[in-house]
Amino acid sequence: YKNPHYAPGRTTMVHLFEWKWDDIAVECERWLGPRGFGGVQISPPNENLIIWSRNRPWWERYQPMSYRLITRSGNEQQFANMVRRCNNVGVRIYVDAIINHMTGHAEENVGTGGSTANFGEWHYPAVPYGRNDFNWPHCVIDSSDYVNDAHRVRNCELSGLKDLNQATEHVRRMIVNYMNHLINLGVAGFRIDAAKHMWPSDLRIIYNRLNNLNTAHGFPSGARPYIYQEVIDLGGEAVSRNEYTPIGAVTEFKFGLELSGAFQRNNQLRWLVNWGTPWGLLASNDALTFIDNHDNQRGHGAGGNILTYKQARPYKGAIAFMLAHAYGFPQLMSSFVFDDTEAGPPMDRSGNIISPAINSDNTCGNGWVCEHRWRQIYSMVVFRNVAGNAPMTNWWDNGSNQIAFCRQGRGFIAFNNDSWNLNQNLQTCLPAGTYCDVISGQRNGNNCTGKRITVGNDGRAIISVGSNDYDMMLAIHVGSES
Ligand code: QV4
Ligand code: CA
Image (cartoon, helix red, strand yellow):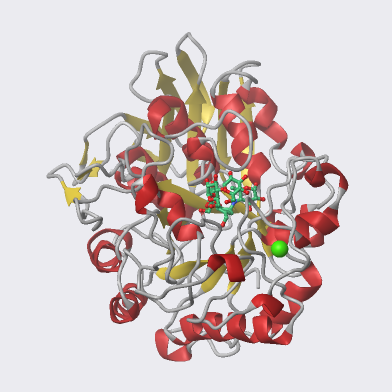
């Protein structure tokens, strides 16, 4: 369950938060496939409660009404079409699976597919679920439970969301049917929402009942779905991430918290010399890594000061470090613009999501940020693919916030987060030649649109990153030789 089953040479997925299936299909074909992205995490595809009383917040999608594939992102036919088209260009689809609970909002009761429920009676006829399928007697998780009471974290409601009992055969069967339906349609794996709130022993049984990935979509025979479980564990809680690593990968929330701190100069970059398990991170193979996610970029979920697209310069630095470093399985966030932390995606008056516009410089419009289309970010996805399994070597730092390292023989990166210039003769571990920096520009035929770096026969080069440069890093790799 820990292999994402990316197409060969691909390493990185992007969360296209609240995108429509038709738009993801075309994005796979025109951008993600050609640029070497490995996969897409999509928003929950199952029917959710429509919440007009809060003007269709993004979080309505975390209130399931049924497992029918019909949401503001599209219907089942559009979903199937997206998965097929993305797989055809080597881009995998990962589903955000909400299997801990149903709805938690009492005032409205119609879903995106027209299903209704009787919230007060624990009655969801479109699944169907009834009162016996939920944990009983009902209770709501208090903040103190997270510290003291793993039982209540698993068996009480997460902010009033009706809490399913995954120990019952009927609930297991409904969940497994839903997930297997998605596997048959060609998805490669799942984000398990709110995994902390379910018993690992129940989850193990559910995972073991899942089908192998669909070979008609290009997966090897016998391939198990990739499973990464949302467990926020910054330490000091009754539930530990270590309870979940035996059954799948886990979202590593310390990763983005620590890197956000370092790139905001709350910590010197030189300390990143031993980035990884010495920092208290999960084993690399167990970790789904990211800087921000859809929750913590807007103050939901885990605490802490997290970098987002709103602090573009240090954010790009942190993302570049994530992608250059060998640790973990990285995921990029792709956002819509927001000020109101509850606001849903760009939509018209009827609540239909408005598609992103694509500008001539490849960036997005219509209220979409599309971080995955920022040159400094997509170029680093290529860097990671090119680096492959090459070991990290030749760490250099200036004792402060200037650092550099190699991916031996494949790539080299330097960062300057100090308030003075970086000018050094450094070992790049690359063959002699002339290379284009993929941060300040790119290779254009035999020319570079940004900085050009000359690597000598000894592998050394003069590396310059001014403290006032537009970006704080410089990256070259064997694919950027001019
Ligand atoms: C309100 C009150 C409750 C009350 C309840 C009863 O706040 O005290 O009990 O009404 O009616 C929304 C509202 C929330 C509301 C709730 C129920 O924000 O105020 O409760 O609905 O109607 C997202 C949002 C939540 C949202 C939820 C469902 O973040 O705000 O709640 O969707 O719409 C912990 C967990 C972790 C979780 C994280 C947010 O360990 O698993 O909190 N993260 C995941 C998702 C996240 C999602 C959920 C879990 C739930 O990443 O996006 O929550 O599926 O850390
Ligand atoms: Ca639960």
